Image (cartoon, rainbow, N blue to C red; front, side):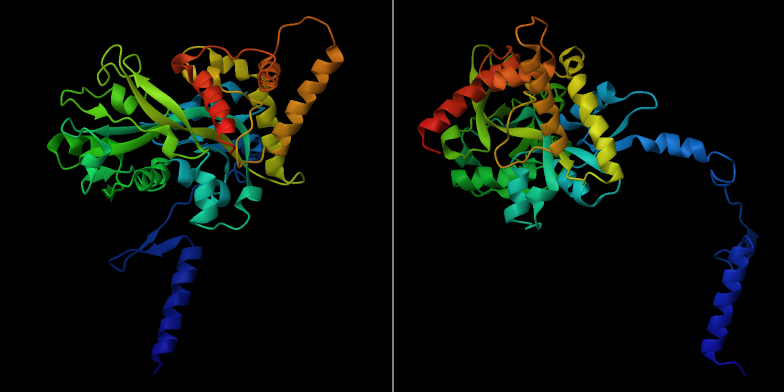
Length: 389
């Protein structure tokens, strides 16, 4: 009589044999034949597989209701080129998860995130050598901090002990919101939930408010009929460090929340187009090299409608405190500078990259943009210098 071990081995062997023969056993102990789809190699399509994957990279964006996914889609649109470059914008949870995806998820080479997220990974998650592994291609738009509250809430202190949504774990708001309330000395009951749901819970009074980081105007608020009288609370710049800059909301940004002629002061955090620091000899470096080339050369197309108006405020040559520029982007900027120097006095229209270089060196005036974010940022830099930081 065979032992139980022998019987088990026999069953495993039979299952393996049936599987190899194209047979499997269903939940009722019956064998049925499986139909396996032919591989690309078997159908003679290997060359097509290579062609589709050869110049493809993934770009981590954000949630559907946020601005990051829109920026990712618009950037991919101007970079995409038949047979030469294909960028796949990916819906994600947001700024924190995007950096994790750069580190660990196959196929993600570029991501949009916030500048303060890098500090989060350094100090809280303590990722080894994070500043050497994650670099940036260029700054992007600034993301305003939206602190939306119910009508009976008139100050930050009124939120003490009440439920406030910090958005989903992995989003940029999940980094900024704890800093926000800690600096202001207010203890709230933090809830990590999608802000679309949080907005509904504010209607019933279950939540007193929510925090959302995103470039204004944000669809989450503009597409919401504010019949309940929700409002944005002002946030003071003087209590926050160099990762944040001053900004404001007006009735032009949010006509359903801010009265004509009034302003609501708030904070904004710089976002960046981040990249994994692939070595030169790698295949991913080769792809990113082309992505950077196309992104810089075609950047002017992002200034045109229907793209987000804040693309006009992006300075390709601007530095981001605490971040290292990716070597390919650094070399691109230097090559543009060399061409400009060689051209001498020859009068030709500036390319977008040249205009960015000139703005960085203070030789031209930045273009006017919605919300005057560039002007506010320059004012902040001047204020920051006076503080001796």
